[in-house]
Length: 88
Image 1 (tube, rainbow, N blue to C red):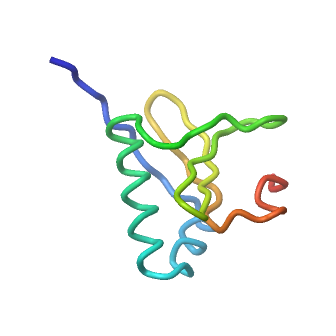
Image 2: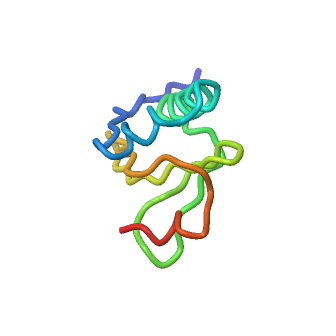
């Protein structure tokens, strides 16, 4: 039997505000995707190139985050645009 350790999911103040500004269906999809990743480690996640962190792709939306063995810290939630990955 496999056991998965759920990570604590934290949204920065900016990420929470960005998530709240999205349409309701997109909010639900993003929250579901973050929960799946936190509980099972599944999802379309890739390490960012040229900077620290990861991105989770949810359709047209991206969640940029950092993680350690216990926590996932989401720092950006929004549509994929040319400026998405230029954030600090």
